[in-house]
Image (tube, rainbow, N blue to C red):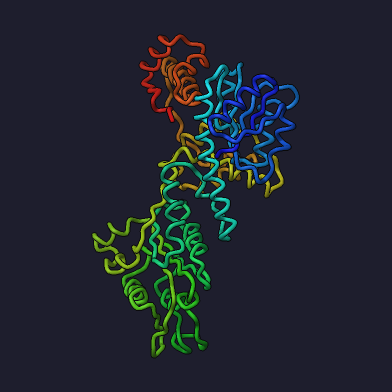
Length: 439
């Protein structure tokens, strides 16, 4: 049952809405003002806030800002009889989950609360996962896109299972973080040892990874324990495994086959208890088919394959990720996070983020420091005629209003102050389909 904190200064309306939401199956707590609402919101609050926009004292936007300071991921739904497109879009950019205009039907409000409640449940589930299994920063897993929901479920499902895993994803998508999560969930007693295959020259790879006996390597009189043995009873993470040469691939294949390692110069192999997690920025299956990666090793490392989606394939997660990174950076640096302005918002939406989460993290840090211009500069647009510029500006306003209203044409027309017939004419001329903005 989703908990709802209802904030409404009108006594009659507050009572009526609270009763209606109770009938819809929500656990409702109703208060008369923003100050009282803040008193109800602690670290353990797991529900959704529904607040009026215009209230004496702390108004809805101010309450939204105060709530986001306490918990940036708490869904807040704003209700207003005076919302226009500027207010609605501004509230959404400040972190509001939705803006609903009065008069509204309880069905519309209840549907918005249910969607927000599902999002809140995912956030709480991830927090509990971090608490029960200490692990590195899970920032790259933030998001409600279907791809990220599926990835989180897969990590939780296969983490405790003693199966080797192949992680595939572009640079900056969080492959090392996912490997650490899998290790944390495995409850293995040994450490996770990382081998950066792309950073080790072929001449050093075998000695570093497999180890060596005394005097087996020129200039090394003492024996060396290789990284494979260091990972005994833990996890061996082979990052950029596609960068290994054929000789190294053959030796790694034997380790995976027999779970034993023979250091350079050693007489007998040594048993190792390992879970092997490999990561690649390339498609290993394609490399194996083309003969550029040992097929026999590929079939051994791909016990379970996890694909990490690039940011351009989950664009709905970009702004929540950015807000999280910016808040963390501001906290660490002791700086107040700036308000999310329209220029930054457009950059977040339009940039392709080839560096993925890592690039977004750096951009957020620069933005908090006031150095956002240090981020990648987008290619300048060609000079446009006046008609093209006006059309582009008009399309942007219509799309922002559709996004604010969830694709509801009636609400969009009210936000824009347009007759329905005029709206449809302009939307058709600008090739805008309202269906794209619905649930």
